[in-house]
Length: 113
Image (cartoon, rainbow, N blue to C red):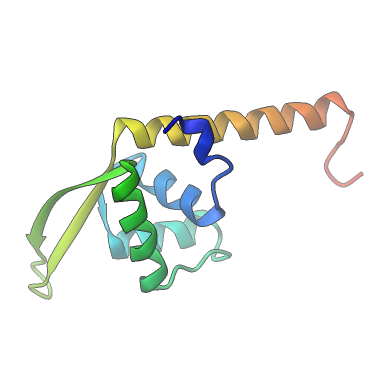
């Protein structure tokens, strides 16, 4: 599927793949980073996150890279990273945002006016 067919992304999907753009992460780290990036506006429930991750795995946006045991609680953690296809989807969404911002500037729209 062409990346344009995935756009526009839901806010949840955008924040999840943005979170994975810098480094592989496990689910809890994704949840915490999404909360921080969105200034606590987007709070992911575990079920919501794992449903989104399952869909992203199926679509080839992300992949599992390893499991390891946490030294703190001895639980297995699933680590996810963005694939090249996922990076293209993210880049396409960022470009879509840029075009929208440019359009507002061309029309003289200013923040707070």
